[in-house]
Image (cartoon, rainbow, N blue to C red):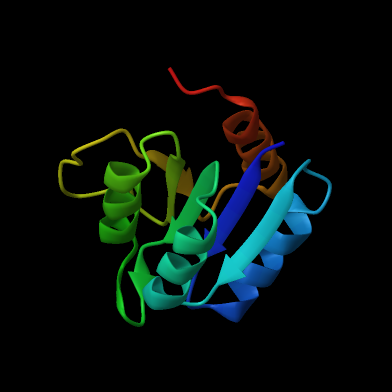
Length: 117
């Protein structure tokens, strides 16, 4: 069963992701910042980590790279307006913040179903 961790400083964005993910299988957890997210990851690494790009205590891309390096089986996605501007040290999926709810839901379903290599 996949586990999802969603991280965003915007409570409205987190609420939207909560609604989109409610029918996906597995556990869903939510955090408002990098520190809270890292504590949840230490407790139980997620199968899928989705982060906004701007967090109150760090940047989302840095969080994804850190978690991906420590937990290579975690699938990481950046939920942002633009794709990452810098080269990433590992594969990061970009989720367009302006995408339709159906597109985001389909991507989350696919990310949760993907099996690591």
